Length: 118
Image 1 (spheres, rainbow, N blue to C red):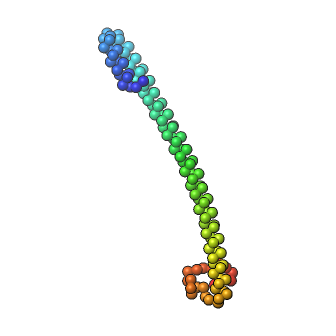
Image 2 (cartoon, rainbow, N blue to C red; image 1 turned 90 degrees about the vertical axis):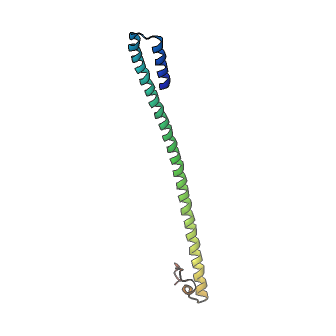
Image 3 (cartoon, rainbow, N blue to C red; image 1 turned 135 degrees about the horizontal axis):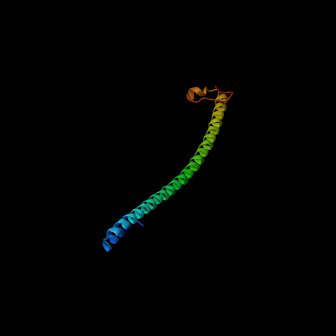
C-alpha cells in the first residue's frame, strides 16, 4: 500500500463520518497506516539495495576472474617473447662469431645474454 493510497483512504473516511470521535480514531488509524507504509517503503528500498549489492558483487567476481585470466595470458606471452628474444640473440651471436663481425657495430642496441656474445 502506498502512502498516497493511505492518504486517500484517510480523506474518504473523514468525509464519511465527521464526528469528533471518528477524527480521534482516524488520526490513530492514519498514523498506523503511515508508519506501516513507511516501514514497507524502507523494506523495499533495503531489498533493492541488497539486490544491487548482489549484482555488483557478481560483476566484481566476473571482472576479477577476467583480470586474472588476462594477467595469466600476459605472463605467458611475455615468457614466450623472452624465449624468442633469447633464441634470436643466440642466432645473432652465432652469425657474428662465424662471420667475425662485431655485432654491436651492426646492431648497437642489442645486448647479448649468450655466454660467447659481446
